[in-house]
Length: 330
Image (cartoon, helix red, strand yellow):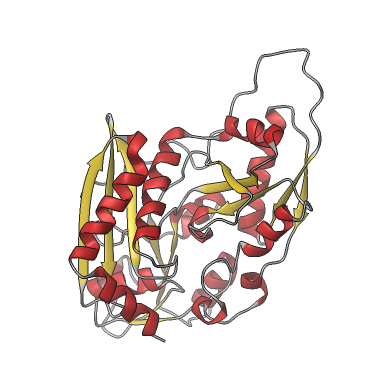
C-alpha cells in the first residue's frame, strides 16, 4: 500500500473569488455548526471561503446529541449523533447550509438535502500522542492507549494485541488533558484535527497507513444544503474539490454497500493517482484478530461503482460476519 503524500499546507486552500461584475448582492447565509473548537474551525473556514466569494455568512450554533453526552458513541445511537440536529435545522429552514466532519456524516442522507460541496481534503492519517514513548512499537505490554473509535481499536489490537485499548470521549482538548493527567500512556487522534487546531507539535508518531487505515471521509469536510435551494447550491459548488469528492464518494459507497455504520471497524482510503482512483479498504473483528483487506482502482468518474466493487469483494470473503460481531460487541 503506497504512502500518502504530504499535504501541501496545514489548512485547506481557499477558493478564488470570481471575476464577474455587476452581480446582484448575495443574501446573507446562515451556516449551522456545532460549538466545539474543531467544529468552529471548520465553520470559520467555510465562512471565510464564502466571504472571498463576496457572500456574507452568519454562524448559527446547533447542539447535537453527541456533544451533550459523555457516554460511548455506540451507546448513544452511533450514526448521526453529531449531524442529525444540524440536518433537522436545514430541513426546518433555520439555517441555509451546514458543515460537517465528513467521517461523522451517515451515508444515508435525509430526503431534501444534498452534499453541496466537499473542499480539498486535509491529511487522512491517524497519529499517536504520548509522553512516555516515541511510537506505537515502543509502548510496553499492557500500556493504556485511549481511543473512542472501534476502527482504531481493532487496528491497534491487530498490530499490538498486548495493549490495553480503553474508551476515551471528549473533544481534542479534553482527550489531551486526560493524557496529560496520566490516565493513558498514549492516545490516537486524527492528524487533520490537530493540524487545524495548531497542535501538530503534540504529535508523537504519524501512524503508517499500512497499519492504520482511516475512517471513511476522514480529513474531509462536507457542506450540506437543501436540494431545492438552487442559489446556495450554485454558490457552494465553488468550494468543491473534484478529486476529494471522487475519493469520498468511493469510500462512502463502500461503507453503504457493507451495510454498516461509521462506528464499525472499517477503514478506507481512496485517492486520485494519475488518471485513476485507487481505493484500499479493511474490515476487522472487534478484537483485531481477523482482518480482511481489499484494493482496486478505476476511473474517478465511476467512484461509487469502485466502492461497491471493493465492498463486494470484502463481503465475499466474510466481512459481514466481522461486521455482525462488531454490532454484538459491547
